[in-house]
Length: 149
Image (cartoon, rainbow, N blue to C red; front, side, top):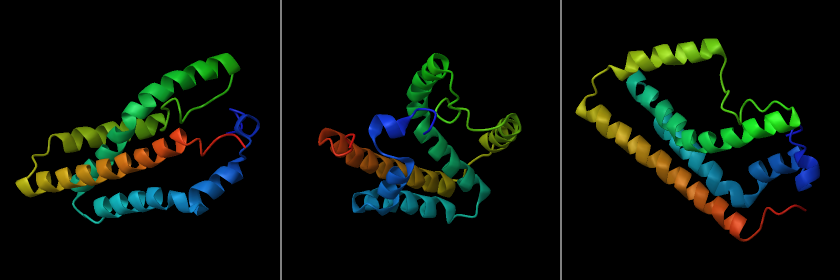
């Protein structure tokens, strides 16, 4: 937030933004969707289902970060700032290695028909929730509801 000087540019402080995200009634649907798909995915104790739940979440952000990451790298270079999260540097090298080991372990597991059905249900739930959230965000942008104060 500070690196990008968003307080000055948007005239929204970090605390204003957090207040909006967590207290504004218009954000209720965003929060509800996140809680709904998180609870749906995490209520299953089967490690294979949990792995696929996390993969679905990870893949849902991949397209976003592929575009934002390119822009963030340019901003880092131009302004000599460090934006690790936006550039896709979400994990340490040890965390990447652990993730790759886990990925290799679970990707070779054969799925039962029940597991496949459940993974499809979780995917649908996550995607519906995210699309709903994008629709809400789009309405905000179109109506200029998040304009600089």
